Length: 183
Image (cartoon, helix red, strand yellow):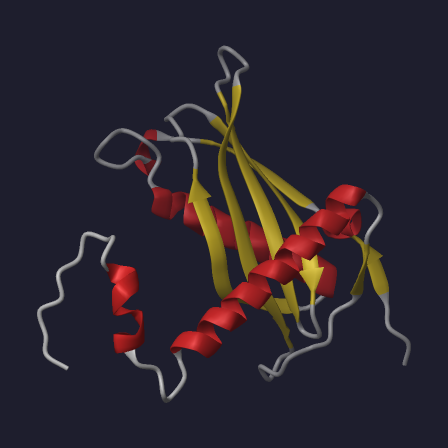
């Protein structure tokens, strides 16, 4: 069986939604939890479109809230597959909000969701490879690789059986922390 490949654009998904007062928090801005829910939905749609199967969220690697979203703004989310592994995909999502009266658009959020393709019994399904067609797509793939490497490095360093916090106490000296325990 030969490996199938798809272009990034073949799996790209975009959604737009008008932000209603019922989506707002106590400060009158759109609640971050509502945006996270929409992010998860578009990540699922994009990953499922790429893999042609059901996908689950494995992790949310980064969610950067850059600007608040106001009630009445039109929010557009654009998602693309930035990286593929054997059964996993990293979906990058950009969120923009447009003031529909002035036409002003602002970048509000960037997020990276790791999605895993599953079959009906919950087993991993191999996903199509990715055809990178421009320098932006290459850069996104490489950045996803680096995030994965950094995540694995942190996990290896801090989840080891022989991990000792004493070895890191000097790093805490420049932070607003007080250690109140004995070793």
